[in-house]
Length: 168
Image (cartoon, rainbow, N blue to C red; front, side):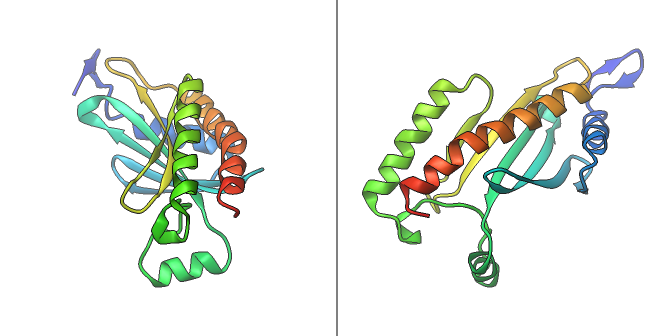
């Protein structure tokens, strides 16, 4: 834990996130001392957003997941799976579709300056992650706010492409 004039710099990350979310007038749930769950509906759909303070790494990680809608959501919850957008052969996608989506994600990661896409090979979950290092500085409301805006804009650009690629 870092100290700056007697004040812990790591313990202020989550209160700063809360202040940024209040600034946006977003509802959220403080899951733990180091994690907040919120969500947003944008032009390309609904997204869950987890903001997690990684104290040991002195970073704030923001994870965006596309939430499925309608009947898919109900079925996934009933089956004990997360209701997030996945591209995987077990989800009915062809090997060619999976490969094309992976190639698209690689191209986007090459283009993007802040953040990156990830795909879990086990279940095909696709998410967008932004990590903000704060080291021995205070995390600012503006950093969190800007990162949220950047993540949403990136998802609005990329997710419709991925949906078209797999016919959903």
